[in-house]
Length: 233
Image 1: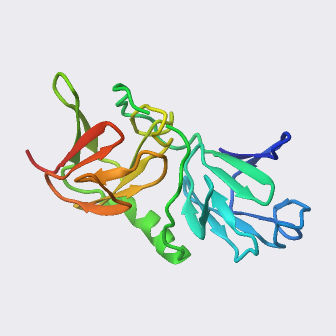
Image 2 (image 1 turned 30 degrees about the vertical axis):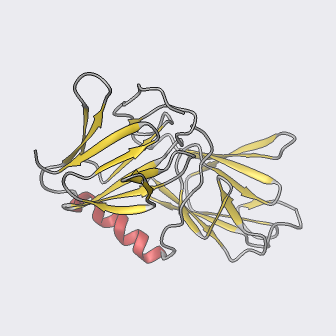
């Protein structure tokens, strides 16, 4: 079961299990925090299967995920939500395990999140369609190493996370690599990479990219890690 660890700078206050959609606010909701910086109904965390989506409810002072202000943001384990003086560390043990690219020195740390679509109906439709959409032969992601043959991961799941965290399916280590640095989303034969956070950005031809549809032969890097996307050899 997913959970939130609620804290201030001074101390950890409590842990809250999340088994449904919840509301956080000053006056109304499942978690009530009496602080003037928090709106009456400030934040909704929506449960969609094993996924959790944070929605700012038009709050006065905003909602921040890993110190980037968001409107709507899908959460990953290790994300830190901040509203007012309170932080909420999100943990979801139901996220899938690692494929394990875990070598090569680099640099991981703080994450900055990219806003995703705000529309609940679109997110619900996406979740409902993902299992059926992931059909046909899966693409492969090659990690090129300084010596030896490249490592290969099959992108068979609808969502594959790349990052330094234990919950990333493809693990790469370093102090500038975000816990979830990027996500590759599959819909049928279409693959898209989305930058999620960290000091090391997703780069194509040495240019930062937040979101891009992948095509056969695309090469990109995250920090010192060099990847190649292949739908055919």
